[in-house]
Length: 84
Image (tube, rainbow, N blue to C red; front, side, top):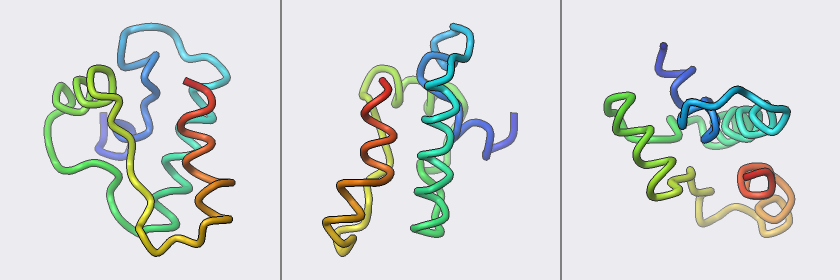
């Protein structure tokens, strides 16, 4: 897997389950975050580190502090959290 695929892999897929429609929504939320911030969503590490962070600690990329509240309430945060 490439780094891009790792970051957009949904929690259910990281836990070994099949992808579901919400998996695509999760991946889309990660891509939106990357476009908005122009950064990597998670710090460099191994696939196993990412898997443990997302599954055990419910790690999700944070929006920058200066994000307009209307955007923060209606975008990535909603997509990432609503379907899990």
